[in-house]
Image 1 (cartoon, rainbow, N blue to C red):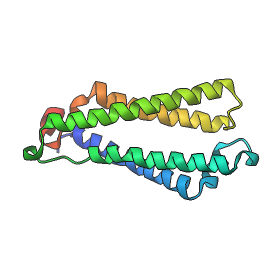
Image 2 (cartoon, helix red, strand yellow; image 1 turned 45 degrees about the horizontal axis):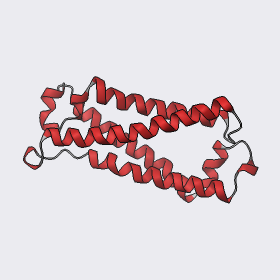
Image 3 (tube, rainbow, N blue to C red; image 1 turned 60 degrees about the vertical axis):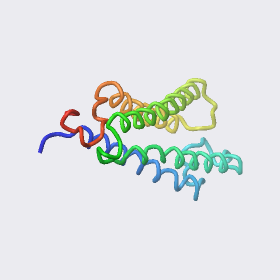
Length: 157
């Protein structure tokens, strides 16, 4: 079977959605378990940080919706490949902007210090945001044809 870049792109969507859901659920249901890994000490865990962690978990789930909506490959009669690509590109540009913003904020907090978050949490967050942004950049700029509908897979090689 020949390599199919569109399939790889769609697997990346599913992997990202699964990671988002798996991380958002404990943020919402048990924020203390997440905060213990992120903050510099137990005194930093308070009602406000719990609330913000739950809000961030909710936003993570909400931002997973466009990823999941980008997964389906409509039959060619139900939508053109350019429609599918446009939707997927919009999703990737929008989410990529958020990841670049968060990564930049984390970098600034790391450099300035005293954010209340551990250095490992900030470096880990920058690594995650950077790797996801790099993946988005790869699909958007290096292999944009892989974002096409499955029916055009032979063109996406």
